[in-house]
Image 1 (cartoon, protein in one colour):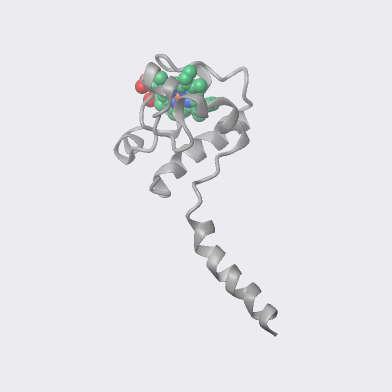
Image 2 (image 1 turned 30 degrees about the horizontal axis):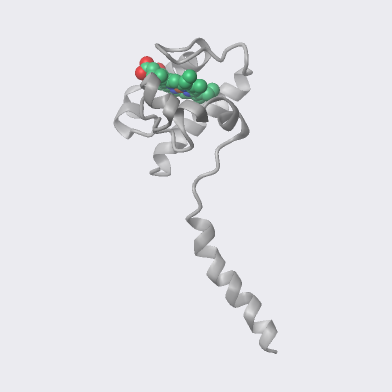
Length: 108
Ligand code: HEC
């Protein structure tokens, strides 16, 4: 009887903790982008700071760029950002653009 009550109580405790977990990035992001842009897209990594990666989670900047611009920057590179057009498929780049857009919606 007691044991049966403990399990749901533990689950209830665990739920809010799970909601606060940092956002998981896609495998493509982890493998190619995190080193400079970080998990949160803000570019506060050693490489990102060195290369002056911009804050991809900035809503103002996001509002000023089109999906086409993001796609071409990822595929062809931009300033110190390397090109990924040969490494990633068009589908992967499209998914990464959506992932960048989601940085703002998540408020992270
Ligand atoms: C070697 C470091 C590095 C890596 C790896 C990297 N970036 Fe960047 N990225 C940068 C830098 C530096 C800038 C800033 C360039 C600028 O402001 O024009 C940038 C800018 C961007 C921009 C904005 C470009 C624009 O049009 O203003 C996007 C979008 C972006 N990166 C996405 C990605 C994605 C997606 C990946 C992974 C596939 C990635 N980056 C990997 C360094 C990197």
